[in-house]
Image (cartoon, rainbow, N blue to C red; front, side, top):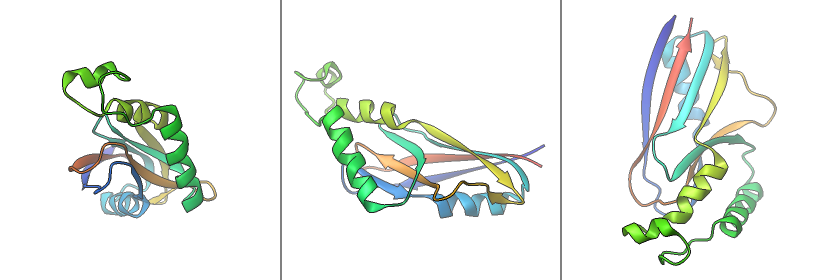
Length: 140
């Protein structure tokens, strides 16, 4: 079995956003030369996520609104005990937990083996600094 590792670095200029990283993951799969296997894509930060869904702007806006209702941004230490440590991103940790840390996608014939409309996204919940995404590919 072979393995391949690549790291993407993104710096999202706003606090919350979603970025389609499917083409970067597909390029890593192609570069790996692995024809049949699995690719793990995970955020290496506790205030961001990786998830699979449709690349539709309205859906992404709905996610932002829904996440803000579930875990509103509030830098004060009153809402989130985490903010008592000097941080202001207690909400971002909750949003990441909801959206998930990673995805695993099958590789068939050196291509991502997706269902209809599936794309891979990076979700940022505490932006404005560089964050890493691990792409780990295993197979034959």
